[in-house]
Image (cartoon, rainbow, N blue to C red; front, side, top):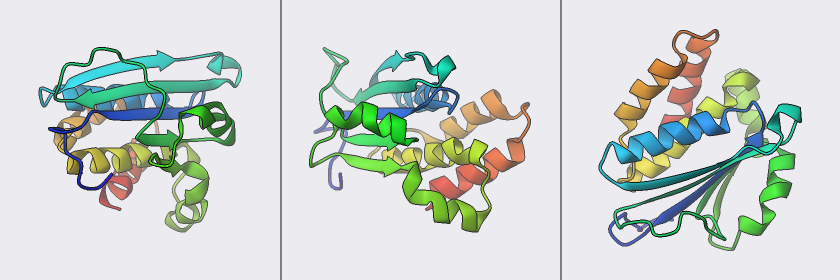
Length: 169
């Protein structure tokens, strides 16, 4: 993904996790942060039966040009939060897809003593950092949205820690 800029590219992002892992919240914050910069953004949520343990997906496109069709066949950037989500998204991966997989971070989470309920916020920080490097999001605006959405909920301090870890590594 290095070397690509919003001026020459439409980035296709797929977020996938089990119901309750915050996939739609992450998607909302990413989309709003890109839109805040005046970029074109589309979002297609796919909830499935996540209330019963199903997979939740979010298809996002971000670019400078008008987006004619929001769906895509291959993702440029993917977040996979569970083995079930990975199985559901196999058809969206190709040799150029960059995948962040939660299972690859188990040792890191243990070392940093990061609670499981904050893993999604860690990955939000990581995704936003990647997207900021491409000029596709306003990370300060994203932080503001995160505060609005989560600061009054239990575990806020842990989520702040997770976000800072993700956005700095």
